[in-house]
Length: 411
Image 1 (cartoon, rainbow, N blue to C red):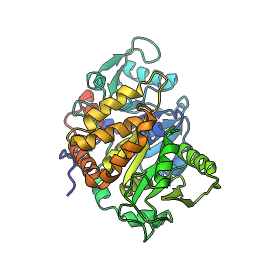
Image 2 (image 1 turned 60 degrees about the vertical axis):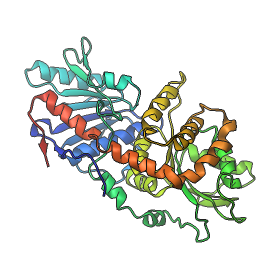
Image 3 (image 1 turned 180 degrees about the horizontal axis):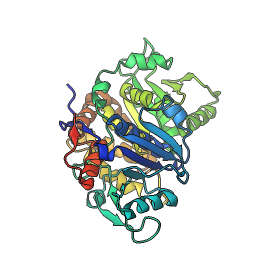
Image 4 (image 1 turned 135 degrees about the vertical axis):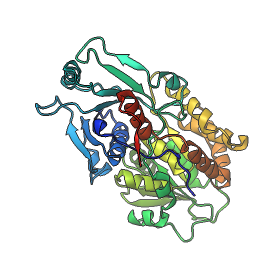
């Protein structure tokens, strides 16, 4: 039985029905992924959501059917008949257009209630998140003078805004049929694959360690002894950085590019097309190991309850290092030391924080743990974190509390 937060589903009160969500796509569509999921979550609770975005092209494959209650608008100044909603959320400090903010201030100056204004920040497990969550940022100058912006931080503890998790997600995960997901992609695992065969999903930024890791998989290192030509790993490769790197690795081994799949040694490669967010979730649920990047896919991998390696966005000042350590401090709680040590070391290797020479030894330790403890520990962690309020519920509860419209409705 799936356990999730026992709190009832919060519904949108009439006075907070209209939401404006602002998002800028930086370079890898992760910001859009977060914002689209949040917009859909809020709309599912009864909100009317306008998503203002500077580049919505990725929604063509990320959410080709759209979503009821969500309107996608280009990033621009508001038109004459476009007035600010009851709640305005700017994602990751993107600063809404000045003309829009000026209309928010004008509404407050007219005596009407000012729109609630939240800055949804990036996800981190670092200590500053609990200190900064829910802090006020009065606007003393500029088009929003007189308004107050509130910081809202996602996080992994009850003193943060929580993690995005729409109602019923874990129940859908538990009812998922792996074979059906793989069949839709034209992928059938071999009948002769050994018992310890692993299905893995690769979704990453440029990864300096990737060629050496692919060599290990192709050469069969890390797995148990297997007959020649037996496939130990099937790797699902996503478009973008990961596919480019894998194709380059194949070329280095004298093989031509393949748009479908190829087998090399003990490794079977399958190149994926762009898939929707719904299908991406199913791939995470189907895989034995998920190698993910950024924020949106990391959170979805956590809820998948499967072993995962998280590649954080690399920053010039090295800020990803303390961010990773803070995550590991929480994510490895309760794991036995013989499991936690290699998981932590592999995560550091995957983020360029350990000597690459350690890869063969660490991977050899992790391979048998995919089924002998790592998976169970990830499932337990997902269940534990699911007992906390999710981000959509926490944000709605915060808006209701700040607006003074009384206790939230539930269903």
